[in-house]
Image (cartoon, rainbow over all chains, first blue to last red):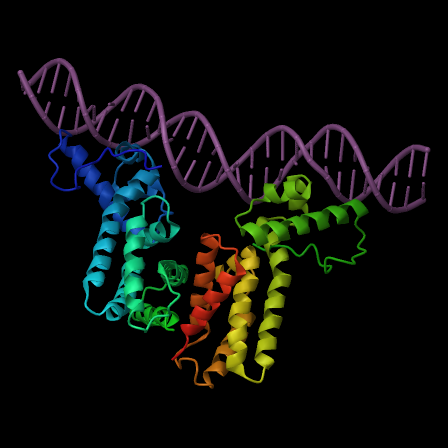
Length: 192
Length: 192
DNA sequence: CAAGAAACGGACCACTGTGTCCGGTTTCTG
DNA sequence: CAGAAACCGGACACAGTGGTCCGTTTCTTG
């Protein structure tokens, strides 16, 4: 699993010694994978990605020896963005206010990226430790406001938030207005 | 899917024209399936059930032509029990109080029956319409107390409750005390 | 433009899980 | 107690998915 780091370049302006067509195909594969994973989750098959990209299966496997490698490649940068969002919330003056914005924000973001959501609440593959730590600090900070139950922790947020997300995915709910309502309810679950 | 009703008898005192050993094996299969589904969910394989029951695979398939038939057979009676619990809650004087007991009760019950949980929040197989209707009535009744947000409905309860259950299953959480805490949080999600 | 290297992709393999078949065995019945 | 029917279960067939191989094509470079 995740056994290789063949592709180091930040997936953009790499003038590696590889051939032009290889780079083009590689970009097509990444784009296809991003799109399909976001839309249908991680159970998308490698042949599907290859077909969407308009290349053969072996071409995908050349860049990413296993499917997990592909998932990691697509997911890693998105994970980083999650961390940044969390950090931003953490920098806010009013921690509780920040949490109130953070939760629906995460809901929205993860529901638009169903592969990312799966990678997040499944836990394996991309190491989530740092992100979870940040979320923990956010919850901790929000507790000081008195608006959040004192026994809450990062794990609780993960369970409730990811749980709701998962069910909304199962129900194939794509309406952001509905998502926001559930964000509100998740927040409610943490009131003392 | 669920293409047969070969086994009509209520799985107990059937003196059908079948042979003794057949009935014995059938019981063993049911017991094994109940146990394994409850413990590990519906992704248990038919060979696993057969092995646990101490019979060959074909013996399982004889009584239940497809895996779905087996799932339905195991799940149906448990579904009925869920309906009865819900009806009991519905008969209570104080609907809100009933809901407060009902939610942790469901959590506990479904977490002890992971296959049932999967069948419930996946929706296919056993028709859940009647049960969902009852839950809807319970939510509706509880709203009158003013302690439940007015825009809540059966679907909301399903999303939040099943979501939490699903995550607790993923985290392999078996401590009933923890389950109760989350029951409290789910209830919190429905406060106005 | 031609030769060599790199990449392409269709065909192939391996594994897992569902569902079927048939020869041997056990149970019922006359 | 013997024949027939029912049943048992190991071996087989099939499908879907992850991963590999090698002959062919395409790019690069002198």
